[in-house]
Image: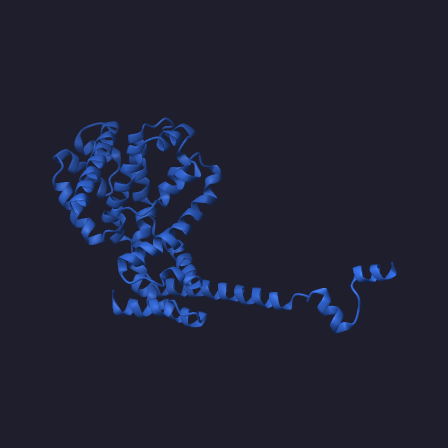
Amino acid sequence: MPDTNRQIQEMLVDFADALRDGCIPAYLKSLTREEAQRIASSDDFWNAAQVVRVINSVGFADKAVTPNLSLFLSRVDAKIASRLKKTKSLSKNKHSIHPPSYFRKKAGGTLTKTERNDKSL
Amino acid sequence: MDRRLRNALQGLTDPDIERRRRAMEPFERATFDNFKKILYHHLGNETECEDILEDVYADIWENPEHLRNVYSEKQLIRTVYLYYMRKRLREVYRRMNRHLHLSQKDLSDLVAPDLGILEVMSQLELRHVLRRLLNRLKNRERRAIDLWMQGLSSRAIANDLKTTVGAVKMLEFRTILKLRAMFCDYCNED
């Protein structure tokens, strides 16, 4: 059963372990309301968290490897292509929306509903 | 700045989107490792780093204005973190925050903080400084941090130091605060 009333040093070490093991979301979910308040009011926690990030990145960032950079590049390109498509379809929609009524009247010679009402009055 | 990176940056700030798209590949090749290390600093998870980085590169392609006046690698890292990565990091955790007890501000400060002087130091310099500072610690303190950096759990460290888990956590906490004070001294000296 997880400890639900951790002191600030325990929460810091748990944060460090979570960062090292790559499971920050699980750590965040484990925090109770009281623990979250304790973190918010502790300067020591924030100061120590900064150093924990540095130690973690010095110790482990170099070991993080991407097996296939080309695959990643193609993923980014696919994302860009999809955004490009979205932008194009948006601009297309902008141009194809119905023109305002005063243009329609000129083009087709028909009257809008309000104008018809005005005329009948 | 590396010539290849400088050329890629020039291509990225081109108003033509297709040219920008072509400039993305050299830009990604030149920056991928550094950007990934920065994200790893905050996430500690390769897969999440790549997912976020994918969006970051697409954001850069879509809106490269902030990179217009970048002339050095340090400046590039700072700008990309402040304008692209931090936004994405915060977005990921904002979605989670409905079920958390941390306030939105605390969550942002924890997972996507402002860049301090330590974060803009190069990896090489950081490693060098950390090694130097660790050598100035007491044996027991250094051993605890070394074992933690080898990936050992608090219980395993406690077994090695022949003490309790609670004592190890307190020792690590105090040592980390001591290291922070040393880092501050180093930065002030510099």
